[in-house]
Amino acid sequence: MKNKYLLIASLLILVTFSSVNAGSNYASVGISVVDTDEIDGSGVGPLLKLGHFFGDSKNAFGLEIEANPMRADMQDDHNATYSGGSSSSSGMGGDIAITFGTSLVYNYNILDTGFSIRPKIGVLFPNIGDDIYKDSTTFSYGGSVLYDFGGADGYISYDTFGSGTNRYSLGIAFEF
Image 1 (spheres, one colour):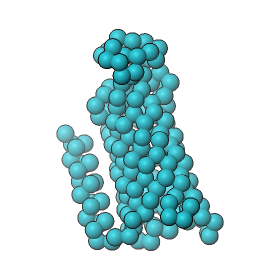
Image 2 (tube, rainbow, N blue to C red):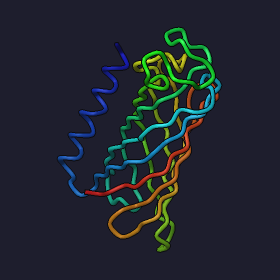
Image 3 (spheres, rainbow, N blue to C red):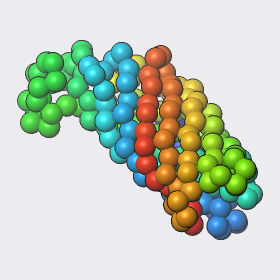
């Protein structure tokens, strides 16, 4: 229950700051692959982020929220009647899990190259809707490398959270 309140508070802070300082907001969409000991292989799904910078977006701190629904085959699944990556009894082809998170980010523009780096540190709620992750709330950290294509930034990211869980993602971010 405490996790839901923290997520709601993060959303309210993001909405408040984005209404005060329009033009420093961003949204991104990408694809992520999650690799952990709890999943047979990997979990794959879209990664959606909303963020706000507290100043010039070239070099500034910001707040970011994310959602990452994914499909994964479990090694030790108590609900489905399949094994080894075959289809579940529901015909869906795996379990669905959704992770939510909030992070403090810093965007650093590397000179005038068009590249920037964005390290982040935050909290992730990985046990939403399924039993893939054993942790209910976990510390998260990672970073992204972005390239400005003139109107949109392409990015690659790496995050780690929980006990040995890594996420790799690729996507595009838009400022508004």
